[in-house]
Amino acid sequence: MDFESANSAPAGGRRFRRPGSPLVDAVEIDAEYGDLLVLDADGVLSGLNLDTGEATRLAGIGQPLLTGGRWRLHIDTDERFAAVVEDFGTAGVVVDLSTGDTVMRLDAGDYCAETVPASVAFVQHPAHGTVLVHRTDWNRIDATALPSGRCLTARQSEDPAEADESSHYLDYFYGAIHASPQGRWLLCDGWVWQPAAVQYLIDLAAWLDGAVYQPEEAYLENDLAAVMGFGDEWTLPCVWLDASHVALWCRRSPLAVDDERFAEHPLDPVGAHDEGAIFILDVDAPRQENTASPGVTVLRVPAPGRPEGFDWPVGRLFRCGDLLAVHDGIATSLWDWRTAQPVATIHEVRPHLLHEHRSSLIELHTDGVTETPLPRIDR
Image 1 (cartoon, rainbow, N blue to C red):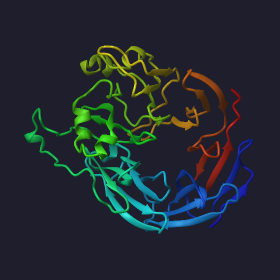
Image 2 (image 1 turned 180 degrees about the vertical axis):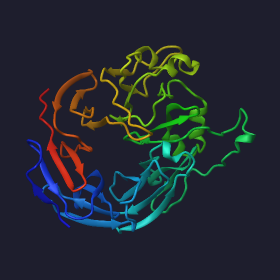
Image 3 (image 1 turned 90 degrees about the horizontal axis):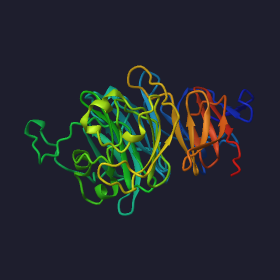
């Protein structure tokens, strides 16, 4: 079923309407079969060509998504495998887009699952090829090679009743996970009782090379240069800007003032802005004891509003080449993040994603998509 061009798009934008089942999610691709991979409420995955409006059916997961759930798409960098997962739920599947076959079913565990998005990230590994990192229980993530389905991170899960100082037991609820572009780091965004947000880094390269307890040890070591959150909000707007710089949009909370665990936090000296800010962290920057990391850049942009419950926040962050795009729920601004200076603002667009290859903002509607080109930036 092809998309039809319409004229109801914002100035400079182009609207494609799609008859039939409502659209649920979309991700950027650069493939022969299209510019977007879209998921509809009948569980059908299609490639959409944004120049012609032509849609190519690629796979179906055999499950209507009309009734409940917040389903999301993730795709690997080779654009062969797609994961369809339920945020704030438990279920998911992995599909081989080259054949249309479902190659893996996911179960994230149901303990407090309603508090966190799905934990899913694709990475490429020189020895293992395409690897899916995914939550297999509330306090555990694993890595699976595709398409074989071989678990690369088998390890013993410990009984909390038997935990001691040498234990690998982790009292941490995994939420969204974000892999750095070259697959070195994995930023985990989750929480601990009662409840406090913790964002921390896993050495993904070491983990996939055989240090199977790296997720547990990285957290339990509690290195302040690696633990990044300092408040009571998780599910933060987040994006990796390059191999070592990651942007987090958050606000400091009273918890960060009163909790000794945050007393020497890298963000503390720059985090007193009550309305929050975007913190851009260089995770590879050196840091001396009891001092802030030299690799912190602050964009004084108020943190976006939080919805009721545990849903995604209103604001979004996108990488745009060497720029950072910030959508605050009303407008989208482009920033030179290295100098902390804004360079352009786009109004009347509520982007679902930023298409880097086409340099455009994509709005997702139940009946189609709108593409709006980004302004040309002369610097």
